[in-house]
Length: 189
Image 1: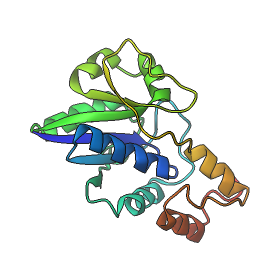
Image 2 (image 1 turned 180 degrees about the vertical axis):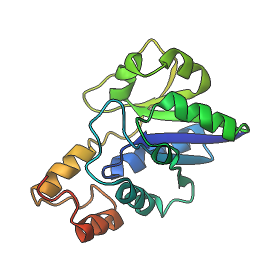
Image 3 (image 1 turned 90 degrees about the vertical axis):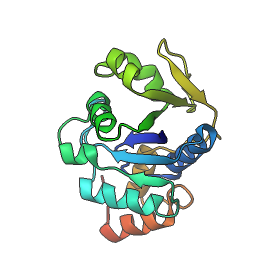
Image 4 (image 1 turned 60 degrees about the vertical axis):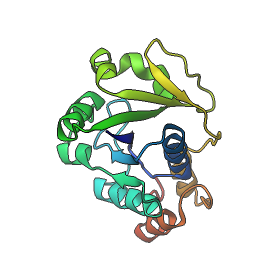
């Protein structure tokens, strides 16, 4: 069985925190790959600030230097709200020889009781929770907990800094920063 981590999100924009989480979980669980799955419309957040095509390009640029990182656009292609239950059903059907590990931050661990069809979802995917500053990994659901180096970076922080014309150096991959500046994304938001 192939072992694949799933890291979902808006990736608006992708940052070094996403990459560190993916790599740490991959190493700890001996995963073959980690698939980055940008959501079209997350059910628990406001819509992304940038287009799907910009977010896809930014993820491709962010993961380009790691052969174990792949992108899957299943949720973008499906359009509408991106429910993990639907995504995991499709992935399990499409890749029957793969065991999936759905990677979430501690903020999402606390939010699990509110996920769509969580009691069914927990039976079809292995959840992996990683620490995040200000949150605890406490839940009634079965999750595997992974300690990773603490890094408090969020896409909101990146967008706010870019909007204020502040530096994001060392917070996002250089290729992503170059793309953002070239397309003038997040300016005056």
